Image 1 (cartoon, rainbow, N blue to C red):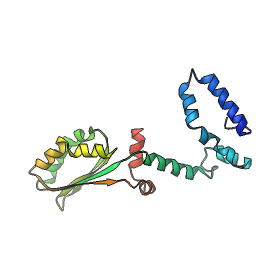
Image 2: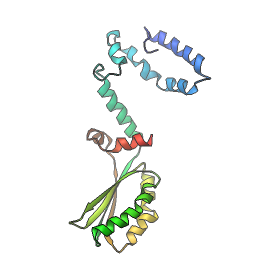
Image 3: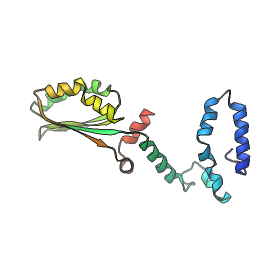
Length: 188
């Protein structure tokens, strides 16, 4: 279809494809319908540009970088991710704190809506914490209300616990290669 001479020919090939495959491959027909406007966008440009628009080669396609950024931004906006930052002071030796944290690492990893956590340690200042990426505000709030956080608050080994929620600045994060895109790829 994308190699048709005109949009009208392409439309005719679309109808033929639908008629032939709607029973045996309904998902393929669905995908074609969903992505149809993207597929036929090239017909809005002069025919001399079609070869470049049809290619998947980044070297040949002058629009590849723009398309990548545009679709990445749309993927980022489709999620309402939240960053949770937790900081605390600790009064026990680092090795003891690390051992206690290792015991809760898997239960934290199993929390619904958690994409990742980065563990933080500043032994000189006796500070520790974490940066978490949650799929949504609700998932982050659920974690903050969980028995894991309640046990942390009740521990005599830690004090001055602070928890802050942040929105993700998608465009900025994409430019600086923040780990948010990888989290989305894993989620999809």
